[in-house]
Length: 371
Ligand code: NAD
Image 1 (tube, protein in one colour):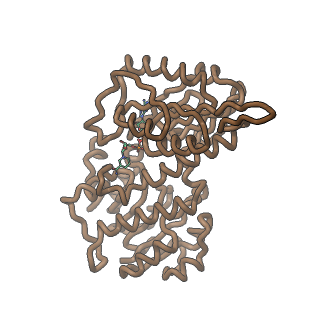
Image 2 (cartoon, rainbow, N blue to C red):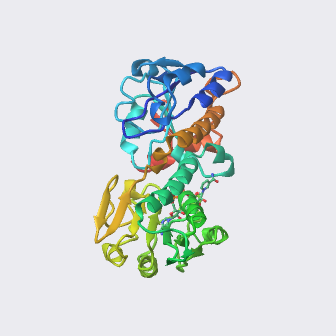
Image 3 (cartoon, rainbow, N blue to C red):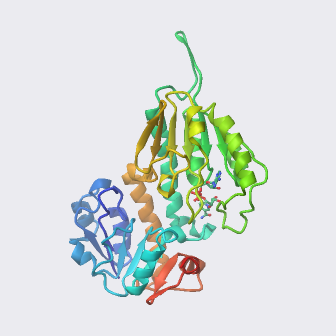
């Protein structure tokens, strides 16, 4: 099949396939078209793609591919796409359901990899995990860079330095990687999550898990968190307030799919932090976990720096694109057959879960329920 790789919008430095992934698809018998300049910000030139077996083309020619790969649902990507084109990317359909309806009406087949069920079999295609892992790692490095004090403890002839105290809200993929990275840098780490199942993982990384009793049962939410009762929120607020007043760095990652991010940190709590403290909010794009977060902005208030950035994986474009591309190659294997033609098995929970529209219809039950 002809597979097209889009150049991402100007704010994005990643690309959906690096040349090494192109080579593996060409070997499988696909024809690869790459939009000129698509990989430049991830340090892959047009020449690298040519050597990998791709043809470098314009945006207009990309639109002739049977499968069009991307990361973001850029405004203009679908204008000009013929009916029947297959789109694969991360389109956030739980928030962008009206756009999904338009794509269905335009006859596009859309697979959004953020909708893959979080099962063992899906792990090799799980772009949320591969990118969140990077965001968690990078969030700690950004915090360490912004923070004007040491992370590790030091006992020197000139005096002793106490270790930095980190508070991490949300121990999903990003949160756990943040714990591991902060521990490697020598910080003391405390963690909150509504899912008690993560307690052991947090403790095995050498951090303290702060428990709040009575979280809502999330067992039917595919491992994701669900919204909490007002009573739970009040008790959680109290515990977070106690921990935050002692923290130098706060990294927030708490998300509820399809909903605004829970607001866990009030402006009052931020006022209680000492000057020079840093907050990195990875949930900024869905409203942020703090009252003062501004998406894609840095706010400084009473000496506390609050960085709202949900796209930190893009700050490591080479490795992020490598892992994203590997996820895509694995997913393409799922939707194509041995002859490298499109083959959709609707009995497969991964195909069914990630397909949003097909045959002029919205086919995803979760998205249909939102309209
Ligand atoms: P996420 O990005 O959706 O959320 C981040 C974390 O925030 C989660 O741990 C969540 O419990 C937590 N959170 C939500 N509301 C909160 C609140 N009010 N207070 C504190 N914490 C709150 O999470 P994710 O990293 O995408 O992982 C979601 C689930 O999927 C997890 O159970 C994870 O183990 C699982 N998972 C499975 C696979 C797989 O098997 N394919 C891969 C990755 C993740």
